[in-house]
Each structure stands twice: as structure tokens, then as C-alpha cells.
Image (tube, rainbow, N blue to C red; front, top):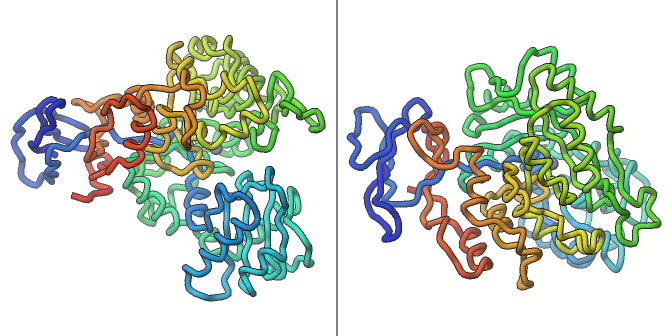
Length: 494
Ligand SMILES: [Zn+2]
């Protein structure tokens, strides 16, 4: 796949790059073209290794993309306005319409069924909150589920039960393959070649059917949650093994454990109470597993040849997870590692555990973190401290929590502000070289022997800017000309 001439002044002269049997086998100028080889004339564009998203929930993301986008809606009025606009843009009908992403926690007034009815008429509409803990249905949707009429939203258990039943009325939820195809293609168009799949309910057995139905272009590392660990053990497979016979792109990843809660629901397990959280049932948040149990599960995974990926958001959970890695002798990754005690940074490095982080949340979580963690936010998303200590970093989105978009991730790593405000704790930001390096699944750069995963860009991703805001804007606007996975073109505008 020669990368043709046409150079930018500050780059080295353009080179050709050959991929054979899924690997880069030659890099050099003026490589000869062999018969039956596909040639991509890249016109002097920039070539980088394929990008990875180290933390995704792909089916949830695919479904979320098809729903009314309510993320960032400032109140009930703005929410119903978005609903109306969405309904105006789709064919009329009586099928259920779903929305996702509002956060009513800090709204001055709470959602009412009447307000939603006023814009939807008789079409059933159900809106899910961004934190997953409440849902807002109109009268038609309540009737569809046979629920009595009510004034406001459904919460917790009542909502979970309703949500499961709503899915049965949503064709995409019943069969997410088409939605997934569109979402994966969109990811390829952003330069993504691989994802780590942490779908709830475990993903180790999801991809056989998907690959058979043509979803065979993405590298996927699947996972298993503790509830299905023994079922997985019975298969006799280990981390790194191919999960779909004859299709090497889908392999087994790690055991995934969600060791504590989240910031938005105030359940992340912390050393100190949430600021002003005295009224909470658990003012420090709480662990989801007793420490011994976490160690036992991690040991068992090690015994059967699985690495571990442990979700830890609060600083107490981060410490306890480190303890569990040490006690179990496990290796792998800590997912999120969001709030960290300074003394745990060198421990993380010494244990060789990868911090699997989501830099775009420096944009989404700024205000809520400041509200609940106050001064502690200097230890939040401490990417610089981790990188300097030698902690391996892997970047991801946690889609659908943030969009599956590596450019948004990179922008969040270099510039910690989503708006005109000054960056938030800019001392913890990364350089673009560091952030990009943590987005290639360890490939680092393209060379002989590296995976045949290449992204061609119209602009220089490493271009330097004095202002990180300008750098973020440059990254967010990055035009991706082509994406190649194991030598196969999966996206091209050329
Ligand atoms: Zn997640």
C-alpha cells in the first residue's frame, strides 16, 4: 500500500508502506508494486497507527446513537423541545420513540408527563436519563406498557422494570445488528480499528453471530463479568485467544469487575465523604464487592488464564483495587482510575497496571466533580502524574457515556475545557504525542512488523499550537481520509 508523494515541509519525505497478510512488511521510498496488490495513493497524507477505544459498550452505544439526543438539556422545556424537533424529522407513525441522556439532578423543575404529552400527542415516547437511573414516559408509552397514568418520571426499580419491557417494543433493541453496523462504520470513519467491549452481561459470546452477519471489520477484545466467569471457564479459553473461529480480529480480553459506583449517582467509593453529602445513605459511596470477594474473583480469573479490568472511580476504590491486584497477583487494567490518592500513583506504576482512562470526561464531569469533590479534583483525571510515574495509559470513551470518537478523547487529554473557561487543572494534561501514543493499543508507530492497521489523515495530528484550545479544535476537526484494518480498507474517502 504505497503512500504516495506530496510532502509537507516539516515532515520527512513521504514513504510507501506495504501490508501483507495483515502486517506491515516494508516501509521505504519508491517500493515496487506487485501484481494483484491493491494500491492506495495517499497523496502525501499523514499515516498513523489505527486508533483504539479501550473502553466501550458497543451495542448500548449503537442504540443510543439512534435515540433522541438529550445530553446537556438544561431543563424539561429544552428536553421536550428536542423531542418535538426529533419527531418533526422522522416519518409519522405510532411506533415507540426513545430518547436518552437528560440529567434532571440539577434542574430547577422536575419532568412531568403532561409536559411531554403536550409535544408528542399520541405517539409513545420514552426518555432515559443519562445516568440510567430514571425514565420519563409520556401517557402513550405508559399505556403501551399497561402502566397507570402518573404525574412524573419513574425511578430506580420501577424504571428498570419498565426499561426492559420498553426494549421489547424497540426493533433496534430486539436486533441491534443494523444499528451496530452503522455505529462501527462511523467509528472506522474516525480512524478506529479496535475496541475493548465491556458490554454489560459479558461480550465473549456476542461476536460469533455478528461476524457471521457481516460485522467483521473491527478488532474487538471481548470481556466477561463475574456472574458468567464459570461459564466462560468451561470454554477453556484464555486472554488473547480467538473467540470466533477463523476470524482473528475478535479475541478474548479480560474479566471485567465494577468494583464501585459512579460519581453521577454519588456511589463512587471515596476516602472522604462527598461535599455536602451527609444526607446520603453512603456519604463515602461504597464498594460493590467486599475486598476478599474481589480478590477471590480476580484469583479465579488468573487461574483460568484471564487478565483483569477493574472499574474503580473513587480514591478508596482505586486503593482497594490496587490491594486486590497485589493480593491476587493479577495483571491488566484499572478502568477509569478517576480520583486517585497521590501515594497510589507510584503503586499503580510499580504494579504495571494500565490506567484505562476517558479524557473526554474532563469536559463532561467538570462541574459535577467540582460540586461533589471540591479540592480533591486536583487528584482527578491525573493523567500527567500517572504518565510521569510510568503508568501505562490506554485511552477510551466509555461510549455511550461519551461518544465513541477518539478525536474527542485526544482533545480532552490535551485541553481540559469544553467551553471558553480556562482549562481545568491544566497541569494534568498530556501532550498530543502522549495521548496519541496511548490510543494505539501499544503500537506506538508504524514500522516493519507492526499491525497492518493504518489511518490516513488530511492534516498533521501532531501539529503544535501555543494554545491548547486551538489544538483541541484542530483535533476535533481532523479529516480521516482512510482507515485500514489488517490490510483491508474499511473506510475511504479517497
Ligand atoms: Zn463502562
